[in-house]
Amino acid sequence: ALPIVAIVGRPNVGKSSLFNWLAGRRISIVDPTAGVTRDRVSTVVEHGGRVWEIMDTGGIGIVDVDDLSADVDRQIQLAIESAALVVFMVDVREGIVPLDQDVAARLRTINKPVILVANKADTEKLGQQAGEFCKLGYGEPLCVSADQKLGKDELFDAVVEKL
Ligand code: GDP
Ligand code: MG
Image (tube, rainbow, N blue to C red):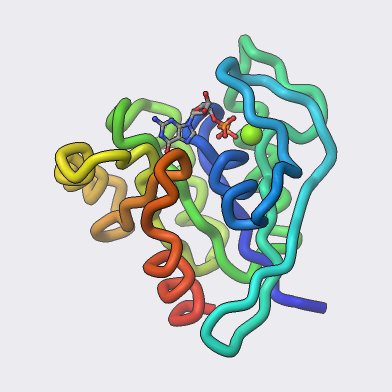
């Protein structure tokens, strides 16, 4: 089986958007409001002589919009069960919120390599705000924009390096 790269992060940071962009088609449901229900979705990616499967772990099962941490619980469980590597996604427009700190703490316990990715860095100026995410304990974040399609090669290089 191919190694699985799991995209993990609180609802609405853009996991499904990133997934669809990397997949090159719209597989995962993108929703401006959190709490979409659907099955686990994954697609095969090839880069730098490596092949892996990338998985959108968000919004699986029934997501209770009043208890968003339940979604995070499921994501962490999936990552524990199947991921070789975790892409931990945050939202540069929102900055650090408590649920991000929750995810950061839980990922520390699962003993898998983590790449911190700051999405929604649509402009250079927004990218410059990403430094605060160092506080999460996963080093400098890698900036991407699923909307503007920025940062894919850098992300794939980082995956190849850590896989
Ligand atoms: P998920 O809950 O983490 O899967 O997030 P979604 O992919 O469903 O996206 C949540 C919202 O953020 C949607 O309204 C997206 O259009 C928006 N979004 C996703 N990526 C970007 C981005 O790179 N830039 C901006 N400005 N918005 C984004
Ligand atoms: Mg989603």
